[in-house]
Structures are given as structure tokens and as C-alpha cells.
Length: 398
Image (cartoon, rainbow, N blue to C red; front, top):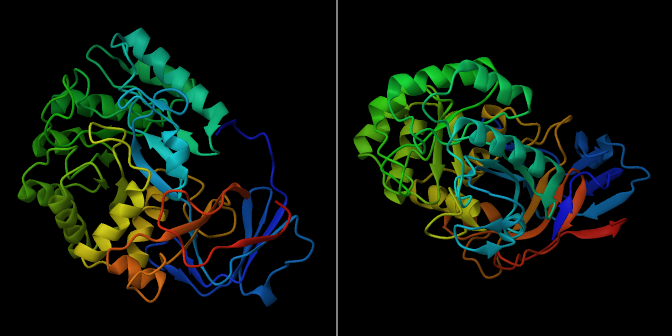
């Protein structure tokens, strides 16, 4: 169900009896705490119940020993308008993704709009419209950060200044438009960065007609803020070139669901070998030709933990705090002052893993028992994940 944004404000919310608290912080992924207190949609306290002011809550949730993590962030999606995607002619894909534990989506360009304008006036108008529309309209409560223009030849610095002044903070994937040369892309990336707009570059072979190969040399020369789908979307660069990008660039390493899985594992491993796990972020790159993936981020977490042999608690940080820090978001971490966006999870019923983390390390998806955005419960037991062994209960409030 799609909702107008910010129609309701959460009061004081207390989460008690947390069994495992994942912080989203790659340097300290597990917190020694069992209670979170929130007020007006923000975290105000994290700790042991005796240390926190849990009196007179408007909403009290007994987490019943399950796991709480920051709401997952999908760093790479292609929305259009509302909760509809023309790519697969599908409705309610964003609300469905909420049931996969995702609370924030970041657009890499509204490229699937039928008749998408490619002239400079039109592409700016589309970006500003998409930014305004999703700022005011949240499908299922989901935060969709949209309005990501695909840059075209002929743009000048004043175009980026105009976009920034209108509230646009993202560029669509560089390479999906007519700008494909490294030097030209570098110039526009610099203009965007000067005006506070973050950039992402397409990496790998063409994904749709009109896009093209973006090789490692173009990626390095362009120096965009995010190396978009470093494992290809879908077709990857050679594994050695991907590893070279991880080593020679200092930018975000984005690994996506709709890419080459073998190279995804290699990229994650080399990031750890280079001692820069904080650079790894996760996305789905959906909707795409392979469809919509409501559980795409959870599937990435399970895949990287089980096949790349990375601790599950660390991989959850790739999908939360890493993305929040690299993209300057106010969510993604369990700490006072951050948005009260949470996913409540437990091991799936009958998983071979003894605990949630064990089950993910074995490759199983966790069961989502509840999702909260800005202190408001947006869904209970997920309709898409396998059923969680235990789920939280709203003891007081709604």
C-alpha cells in the first residue's frame, strides 16, 4: 500500500528483550545491548534495559529474543513513478521489497520510463519531478531517494547547479546516456561533486540497448563516487580488472544481486584483503530483465557470508552502515540521533543453523518478523521471507 510521506509521527518507542543487536558499524558489528528507545522517529538511547528510560512509551515492542538490525539499504534501484515498474509491468514491487527488510532505496536513474527524455531540459525536468514525487510519496512507507538524471553530452556546470538547487542529490548511472568517455565523465563528475550531487558509474558490459561497455580505465578516469555494480549489471569486467578497480580506486565498491555472482564474491574478498571492508555496499540493480527481487539484499548477504566466508554480522554492515556513511544518510546505524529504521529477524523455521547468524553463514535467508521506519511499524511477519522461528510482539500501542 502506497502512502503519502510523513503523514504520521511516532511518539516514544521502546524495543525490549533484543536477543542480538547488529549495529551496522563495520568496526563494531554487534552491540552489547538489549534495549532501544526512540522518540519522534529517532533513536535516543541504546543499551541495557536498566540503563535506559523505558517509562511511559507510546509503543512498546517485545522483541522476544530475536535480532534487530538497521533497516537494509538497497544502494542501486531503477524506480519510475509510484509503486510500478514498466521494466516488468509489475505493481507493488517497492512495498514487496519492504517485506525483504529494506527501508531505503537509492535510485541509479529512472531509466525505464517509457519515452525517457534525453534532451538536457527534459532530463533535468524528469529528475526534479522524480525527486519531488518520491519525497512526497512512500510506497508502504519505504524511503525512495530518487531523481537521478542520466547525463548526456552537452551538459555544462550550470545544469548541475540548477539540479542541485532544485533538490537533486544523485546522478544516474554514467554510461547509460551518451557520456561514455572517461575525460568527459570526469569533468561532469567534478561539477556534480562541487554542487553536492553524488555520482555512480555503470561498470561492465551493456545492460540495455543504448548503454555500452564501461571498462576499468573509464571507471578510474571518471572517478565517480560509486563504482556501480562492480560485478556487472549483468555482464562483468574480467575478474582481474575488477580486483584492479578495488585496489586503484578509493571509491565505493557496489556489489549487486543482478550481476556476476562469481565476481561478486571475488570483489568482496579482495576488499577484505585490502583492509577496506567499509567501502563495500550492496544493491539489487532491479527492476531489470531478470525481474524484481524483493529479497535481493538478504540474498546478497547470505551469498557473501556463505560463499565468500565473511562473517554474517559484517556482511549486514555492507547493506546498512557502509551505505549510510558513503551516501551520507541519517539511517543505517544503531546509534542515538539516527533514524529509527529497523528490521527484526530470526532464523528461518527449520534452518540448519542454530542461530540467525549461523543460518546466514550456511546460506539460508533469515525470516523477517517486523519492519519499522521512523519509529512506525510498517509490516509484521514478512509475506516474502521464510517464516521466522520467533517474531516480535507489539505489547502496547500500534
